[in-house]
Length: 202
Image 1 (cartoon, rainbow, N blue to C red):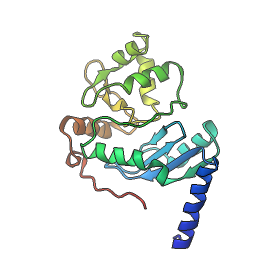
Image 2: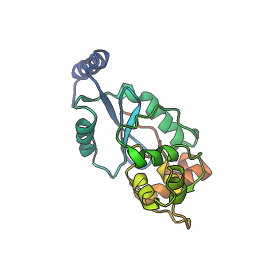
Image 3: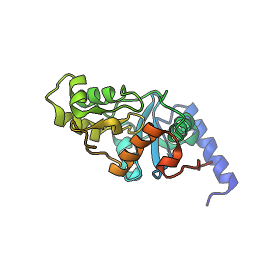
């Protein structure tokens, strides 16, 4: 366990790294009603949301390989992201106001994910709708793949995309989490996701 002196020194180093442009990707682990999330952002915006069932170490290695090796835990850099997620899980936020860095996606997938980002709170669309919005109505399977590879779930709300017949389809965080997110948006409030108490790291 770090001493207060070690913690202060680490915080000072992180602040200096950010000031001197030595920090390309800031990340933090934060709590949610479903378990810990990994949040990562660049100077452009939020680049990655890792879900509880995903290996955060693997996600950080991937960020180092695909974005920059200058990845550093810097909680203060993500305060606004955590604040908005807290409000969302409490049923008090219906639209995220966060800049997005789309560099982990491209081509048709990027078009689909941008279309997903425009689905209003509390509403759903189908994979066919997403394929059509991305410019190729027949590419339903590819649209499903784009949902499954979404690097910024929850904020880019792929949980709002369902099968054409109304079935849930898939979800990277598991179907119970998808159901709970849809229920939260239908009803609002943390009680419907098992009760959420803020436990942000210092």
